[in-house]
Length: 167
Image 1 (cartoon, rainbow, N blue to C red):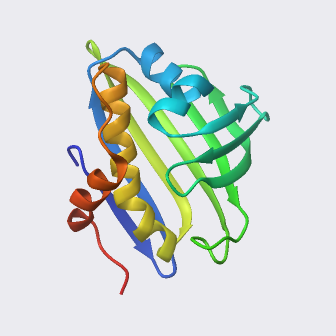
Image 2: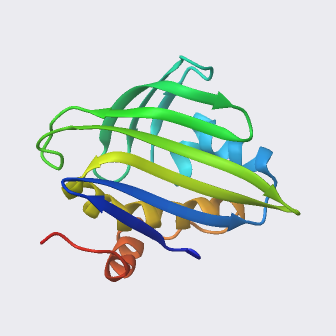
């Protein structure tokens, strides 16, 4: 997979799968994924997280300022974060979305192998989210390395050709 992800399509539903090797320990990556201040920086998010199994998550994130809520399905610090992604209908998501986001962190030497799976997406949403997720992960990498964050739209546009498109 490398730095790119893939879109697995099954009829009208789809799953996004991304894998990144990050030169940081899992504890550092976990903090970037779960600390509202860090999420504000790289994910452009206003986040409220009740970090525990059965807790809740609410975010307004990204350039489109998508709003979603959900229950935390798995909270296993420094290894697994899984939550519902429930978005009401809006201009960019006309039918809303009911899906599941899962981050898995695995220590590989001095690095972390991050696997992001966003499942149960509608096909239309997955095709739009794929280059956007790629762009966010590029921003996460820069954030972790204390480098300037790449512009989300430019990164999205550059990544678009690596993923299937709406047809």
